[in-house]
Image 1: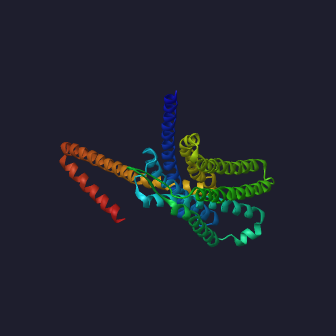
Image 2 (image 1 turned 90 degrees about the vertical axis):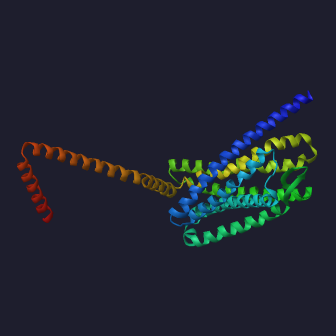
Image 3 (image 1 turned 135 degrees about the horizontal axis):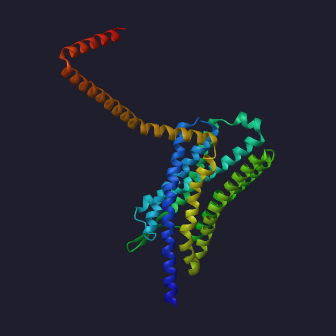
Length: 354
């Protein structure tokens, strides 16, 4: 019976790891490509506005957040072993956390900005500038780096006998402190701000037409639900992990649920371009223009080649017909052929001179 239970747990763990690897790979591909597209359009195609600055900052954070997921894919495929050394262990942790905080703080800033733009229109019109948005984004990155530094400090490569993994080297109390700090700064406070802001926006949206009001409610609900469902399991898992130190059953749950909750957290970075950017009319307009331009550029050479080939074939066809006609005339009457060609030359010269 014990052997059967052990085999069942092993099979479940293996299936969970395979599922997590597939999810990581999909999130890596979709997240990097989607956010890279947003960076391209908002950074190079759209006019610089407050909204485009928010979207660009969010896309950069989400792009880096998902791009560094490749290290987790490799580590997970090797049963959580870490083959990259201590420097990459610290760097991967620091960059991931910086971009996690930067993404969440940017979402919070977007929520506040939208709320203020609707409720205090005159103030927002006078105070909302591109320069101030850039300064706020710079402050977001600095704050995110400060919040992430303690985690990178304690991150190191652990293990022996040729088996190494990237983890935290700290006391149990220090882990509790850092997890509570991340839970408050990375979820509770931003979530409350986002909910309050969008509830206020929803109240103002009651004055809209019925169709626009329904669409606004749908967008607001999607944003709040996506943030909640993607990040809450991740933070709950972190606290369960701390409780699992002296509990074998909880340790098994942690090993199974850990990669899945992390996948949900990374999934939020794939949803952000859809929820925040692709719903923007100006963005979708610029995106369509960019795609059309790329397609036109890609097909332009083939189009010119086709025209050139068609023109050359027509020219050769005309020359061939003239040659056949000339041969026939020459056979019938050489003198007539000579006079015909001479008159044709004269006509051509007259035509050119005119």
